[in-house]
Length: 447
Ligand SMILES: *[C@@H]1O[C@H](CO)[C@@H](O)[C@H](O)[C@H]1NC(C)=O
Ligand SMILES: *[C@@H]1O[C@H](CO)[C@@H](O)[C@H](O)[C@H]1NC(C)=O
Ligand SMILES: *[C@@H]1O[C@H](CO)[C@@H](O)[C@H](O)[C@H]1NC(C)=O
Ligand SMILES: *[C@@H]1O[C@H](CO)[C@@H](O)[C@H](O)[C@H]1NC(C)=O
Ligand SMILES: *[C@@H]1O[C@H](CO)[C@@H](O)[C@H](O)[C@H]1NC(C)=O
Ligand SMILES: CC(=O)N[C@H]1CO[C@H](CO)[C@@H](O)[C@@H]1O
Image (cartoon, rainbow, N blue to C red; front, side, top):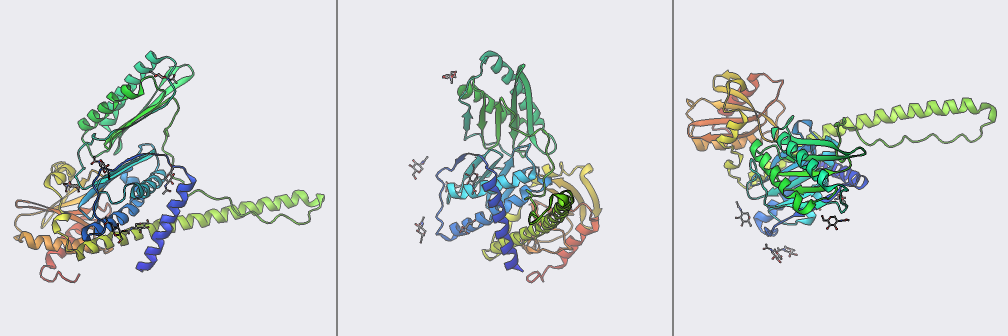
């Protein structure tokens, strides 16, 4: 089973590679500071392998609608990273861009602990320094069009107003994204198009100040220019005199459908039979088109299923590796503030039920992932170390009838378990896991 999944993984990578050569993703820039690690050391080689496998699975996250083109991830649960796709691109483009970014970043920043890469449609970065929930404006990448605007005063005035609106709108956010676009008439024949975006894990105020910082960096380098960009790791702005973003997010197309194989041309066709023959040819083409479409859809659905499975297999593998390394159970730990933010401070509105072991809350992580948070009642008198060990065992488990345990939070007497949220499962589902968890005490070594 594992070899088959691995084989599929290769195919998946091949597909992405293939697509990339067809599309021509624009590479903007990369920044790797001098944070090299030794790939020959034990920890270095582990890091390299984890980085490789984590990055190769990012496209499968990017292709999920629920991620909204953004994902916070851990590499070996020690280093953290994120990708952000431009707010207007669909999941297909996002996945392809992230795949490209992953390959490029490995080539351009080999053996670096900290790296950032910007492509036209996405940003990818990772670091050993923590990056979630905060803005990073320490690196700036700016670009500008070499052509000047004809009426600089009007242009700059208009652009300033548009950028102001964008900073406010993007900070407010919309459907899981901190992203906004604006367009305005610069002359009867020309428009200005502008865009601004922050990573959605930063607070609204931080987003706005990041964008304003980016805007304040525009005039120095982009004065009068007909197009310009300022890119920080946490936010970016861009404007052009042509439309460079999609106004409507199109439905992701199943795949770029190659033309169906044409039936062989008729060898002998008298002029008399010509019209009937061409009718037959048309019918032939229509039927073969429909057949190839059906085949493609089937393959697509199959691939999607397989890709989900391949992803699970890999996460399993990463965790197993971690197990071999005796990874600290602390690496599955979430901070109380993370959980509080996710559940709106255990708000009554987020409560989805109450059971014998305590209430369950629904929450959302900054990456958009929905979670169920089980707040264990303080009565369950289990030791902290015991608790942690069991968590590691349960986190390694993958079973169709179990909700995936993502981690836990320990803070004083407060013990919480964090599960993947499964919308259509009843509360018993989460309770079952807890009961199961408590029952495995003592016999936890072989799940
Ligand atoms: C980074 O490393 C290069 C050579 O490997 C060196 O020339 C450069 O000065 C270093 N930069 C910093 C900021 O340390
Ligand atoms: C990250 O790595 C750099 C370079 O190896 C090191 O100087 C820094 O202390 C590390 N940061 C953390 C939080 O481990
Ligand atoms: C790691 O080992 C390879 C081959 O053994 C060698 O070529 C490379 O220079 C080594 N790298 C470092 C950073 O020591
Ligand atoms: C990382 O993946 C690339 C292919 O994507 C492969 O060539 C390389 O050997 C891998 N490196 C490690 C350390 O696994
Ligand atoms: C555009 O304007 C800048 C000054 O604002 C000037 O330095 C530059 O030469 C101009 N470029 C062109 C192509 O006219
Ligand atoms: C690995 C890979 O295919 N990278 C591609 C990403 O997109 C740029 C286009 O800007 C190509 O040059 C790279 O080859």
